[in-house]
Length: 243
Image 1 (cartoon, rainbow, N blue to C red):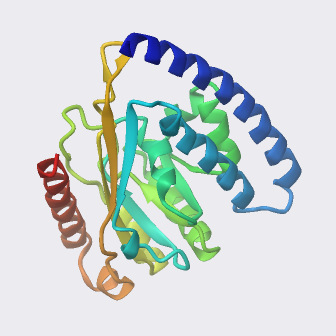
Image 2: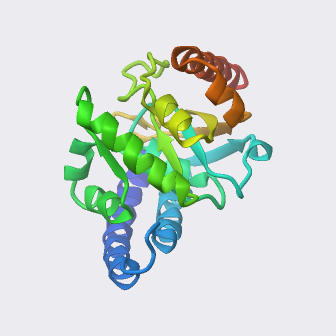
Image 3: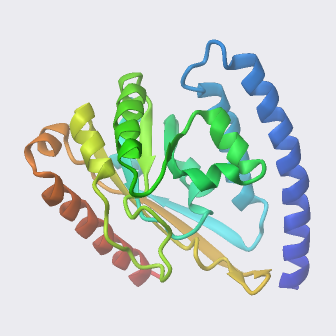
């Protein structure tokens, strides 16, 4: 039965995604001249991203910590990285416009990469000094215009599902821009398939308490990074203990 669900799911998803892509191109063409932060395009993408999960009857989403998110603020948002499903999953964050920071190779993916480009998201190359400079320059510009930035501080997907070491980029950006850090944690995106079949699965997104801008500015970068990582690890354990 799960095999039939999987076939039907991917067939519907493929048709819907192509139609969505054509609509995104149209929205981009009509709004790019005046919508610098791609607010409308972001709303369109939110519908598609959430539909990826809603159209599969074996999947559900649990969203926790809504009270920790102030939609009138912008943040540097940190989140652990388990799979490419993390990107559409984070669109459950309500009423907040954001830009992704993603590795350059992601932009070479058919359709998906072109959508990220139209969104005006930020590209980085691991280990490149220029990428860090571009992240700070572009990130502070977006934050200054009221747009949040989402960064995977691990820099790449976890092979085990556990949280790896963090890199400094997100924390340097928050310090430079003078904004709060909003730590988030996700779980479940590494295990929605067994072989080629989809399986019953709950995807969890939890928003933790933000770190005030004053504290971001006061703490050293490594101390700040260690604090956020420790909180993320603790919250991931609590989510898994609730299963």
